[in-house]
Length: 328
Image (cartoon, rainbow, N blue to C red):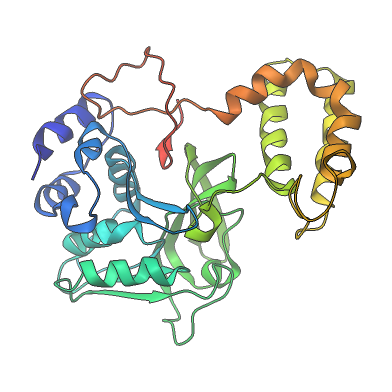
């Protein structure tokens, strides 16, 4: 195994809390067992791919600092049963299985048959991990345990599915990156009696759970609306947008979300570029967001932290974009 002890030391130096039981698991479980891609970037605190589809979709194993952070916040103990949504190559499931021990159990769910097949091929020696295909994140699996104590969601979702929140036991919780495709917040959603309480653990950038949603293609109206919404919120926080601009952008976002979900992208579907509804809306609203274009470009290329990298420095600029990491 490449130098995991050195990586763990760099994470600690970078301010990432890695509990002893998480360190022991990361030292014992070899990342190379869960991907055929080069693992060197992982030891520079970057996510690495484990699956790529013919259509250009890519699924990754999260960067080490994010994995350590998720496992820290899960508050795991021997004998627990943990549900994981999102394959992550099977690596995170194996780490959890190592921590909860032989009396514990890990139930891994993923919407992609390819991702589940990959995981099953890599977890043959992990009898306490069960993996299966999930019809959809919003749909409860058939014949699934009724009560949930710990749930980890490893991909972007807008809200916690009802079948999860309704089954979390008193004192149990889910960790999930909630938000849109442009950015999310890692949320701890805990049940205390009859109430659910949410704790914001910080901004993150996760890719979608389903690999199909990561396949390359033109930006659709909802994705553009997400990006504009995030841009507007950031500009408002920085006092960079006036009231008229904000109102016009909100109207544009609403109109974009009202476009049909199956609308062909600009230049396709027999619709001339100049007559495409998405282009027309953007053109009509362009006087309102031209001043914000530099901010929009920055949102398309966010800078994300890598505290476990050999040469990482809080003050360094980094032009790269990597999913599943804390935003600076």
